[in-house]
Length: 418
Image (cartoon, rainbow, N blue to C red; front, side, top):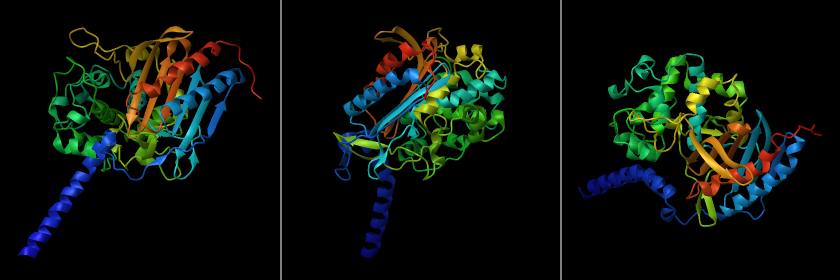
């Protein structure tokens, strides 16, 4: 009897550890104080660099940009930082400093992809804009018109506009009342090959408010929207994205993380403890398409931003809808000045004055990303790093110095490169 109880206790303890370990992984990755004291290493003293200059007139700005990147990388103790800028529809510069993988001594290059977190949202929203431009989706028609077998009746009257502007009333990962889904959002150990399947992560969660009456930023809005677009196109979501976005723009490095292979040029994501780093735990982000599950390069993202300025790619009237901050049913603009897949903001830049831009940041597991489009100057900027900072703009604030370097040259006469 004693042996039976002992065996049962071992089984119970094993089950508890098996269930609790992913939760510990979530907590330790969120909070530095909870991280185990093993496996850490200091950043190497030498930091390799890679720079691509597409037009000689931007070479002085590119040299300045590399100095800026290294200074910001050092300031935040990041293994690497990478950036790219497109002007007038063309990529003019890409730069990268640091290490893609420290243990394997792999330098980062301008072709290295990173997790982009919530910058996945404007990636997916680009497909929505294309569907709207083609007349295949109306932003104010209930999604039940387009989607097959919605698993929650409360979703039937959501509109694509409400989902894209986070005014539908869905919960976010951390306030999910679907307890199985909440566990999955922390464990991150299950593969979802289809956004329709990923709806199970939150399909029993209660709504936070009546659709359209308030704002609550939620990645689940974008997951549901992905499933709706898949139904509209009558093809798998990955194929839809390739047809409407990736192939037309030549975004060869942008893909769901779960599709990457060992041959993918990919930056290891790191957690930090003081001035030391170690690789982030293994996670599966497949339930987040197209909310936070993509990897990409700054070059691809800068091209994506530039495409939004092309009337031939996205109609001007559609672009205006997607870049206009959403209003609640009360008539007030939402608290984040959030439009459809982008935030709209005004920044004051030295030498440039006030600059109106649309943007989206991303924070993922051991990585951060920033995409910014400045319509009045026809500039698109993207930046990535393979660590997380406590304050997002300790990383993303680099955009201001990059703009200061490149914007004054944007209207200069082009010169042939060597």
